Length: 287
Image (tube, rainbow, N blue to C red):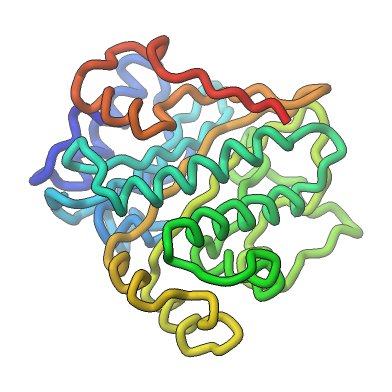
C-alpha cells in the first residue's frame, strides 16, 4: 500500500508482490495469477489474466483492488485488499469500503460449525443492502430487496470458497448438495455447512458494473430499489473487495489474515503513521 502511487502501472504492483513473497517469504510460486485492478478494472472479478494483463496506469482518484496469494509448501493463500491510490478515501470510496468491511465482520461474527455457508452469503447481501440504503444508493424495504435478490446486482460472486492445496479447493458440493440457480448464489463455491477445521475465504464485495446496473435499471422488479441518480455517481469507480482466509474452530473462527480493514488503518499505513501489523485495529468477531 505504501509503495502504490498514481502514475504507476498495475503490473508494477504485481511485480512488487511477487518479489516480496519470494524474497522475504520463500514463496517461489503464487496461488494464482495476481489481480491488480485499478479504477474501473477493480470491478472486473477475474481481471489480470493474459487477456487483461494488469496493464492500466493508475489514476490519482482510482480505487485499487489487489487480489493476490502466495503458495507455501503447496498450500494456497488468497487475500484481497482495497485502498485508494491517493492514500485518502473520498466520501464515495469510504461509503463502499465501510459497507464491505461491515459485511465481512458480520459474517465472521456469525460463523461457527453447523452454520450453512449459504446463510452467510444471505447475511452478506443483507448487510450490503442495508449499508447501500443508508448511503442513499438503494431505497425501500430490505426484506423486499432480499426477496428480489438485489444484492447480486452489486456482488455477483459467491461469498467465499474452501482453500487448501488449491485456491478454490474441492469439496464445496459433494453428492447431494445442489447449487442455487439465482444470480450470485450460483457462483457460490461452497454449499455445505461449516465444520471445524475448514479453511474458507470470506470475501464480500460491492461493485458498480455497468452491464449489471443497466440490466437492473431496466428491470422493474429491481429498478424500484435503485436510486438512479446516486447509482450514476458511482459508475466507473469499479469496486471494493476485502478477502480474508479464515479457519473454522470448534466455537467460532480464527482469522489467519492480518491486513488493514478499517479506513483509519488503510490511511495510516499509506501515510506511514502505521508501520507495523501490531498497530492495526484488532477486530472482534463475537456473535
